[in-house]
Length: 506
Image (cartoon, rainbow, N blue to C red; front, side, top):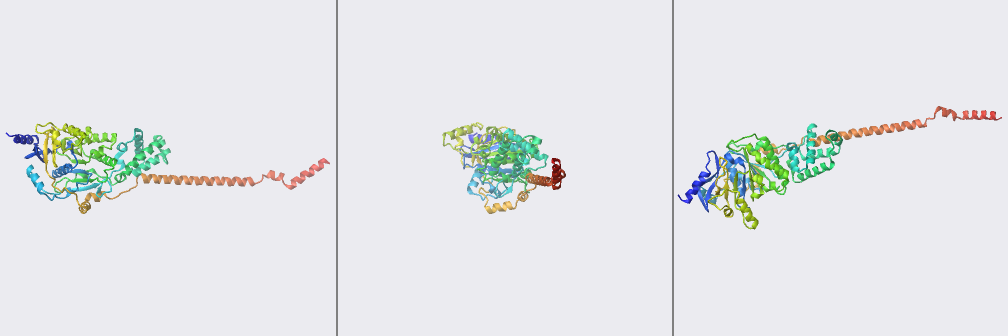
């Protein structure tokens, strides 16, 4: 048996699956693509998370697109974080190209051009279905971690949330939370001290500054109503295909705090909302986080710990999380160790640091008698990648240099007109883009303060009136002569006295 035949059997045996699967492409031996040596990913293991890495321009985004399309075809909904604005083309069919036909002929797969059911989402000023969450939904613990508060400051936030719960003060947006912070050390100081003890003005000032930082990054657009229901991410269209939700994030690359805030809240909401699934054979939802370093680079230690905990636990809910980044080192080792699927595109070896990074990356993959992994990492062409996943028993598959299939949808983005039409036809946009500003803590406390000020003003006015009345009464009494004094000082009395005195002296 030739080496080529041996390799073919090696790949087919390593990537066979009894259950349903998606096909990424065909394995390569050296520079040659081995037709029908398919690299299959079992649906059963897709909730074990994954990584798509590689240098700029090596095809990471198109790999993400291929995965999203095939998952949708299997009835699995997908959420894509579109940081570069490259993914809206999923809604339209590919125009095709001779190079695509040539690629698929090598792989041994037919090519079918088609568009997919796409929902455009936004958390910023960009157009799309708006995602929001209330401050109350975050809760004191998560909000404190996002704001990177000290233990004392976190305690104050918990006290404020309890006060709002006890006094029926809804915390919907940042305006509400800021108002409660100010109220705690100003108009409501005595009331809150009586119930919960003294609250430091310096601590509330520090918390307020952290809230303002989130606001400046656009958090005021994210916090509020109407809250997005995560179940809407798991819709299936009339053809049985999973919805592909594309979250446009092109204007928040310089706002990592907001991105981290959103991601953590979303993961926490999904985790608390979705039921335990166990080993069901297919995921409920797959999330792809493009430019993943935006989450990890600027996140606080507390925030990183929270993300790591959720990544470890959310698998049991049938949720798979896939990080897309240039270098595997962008992802913390505690998260990297949880990833079952790894798709590694080419890395550049321009510097000594690059070569060290390539060596470390190669060590993260299974050994192979067919590849020098470190060498192959620098030789991969566009649309090629080293792939390793878990088989249905949870065992790593053989390392495969893979010629990846082409996207069936458009690789280019939608025009502004196409994008507008897509959003205007969205049922979710009609549901969530209505702006709500119902009575909440801000309005209730303002009304309470206004009423207290009015009562205080009336009491002060009454006090002033009473004081004036007393002054006038005292003045009237002081001008009225005592009757005895009046008799003693009368002219008749004085003349009588003088007359008596004259008689006595004579």
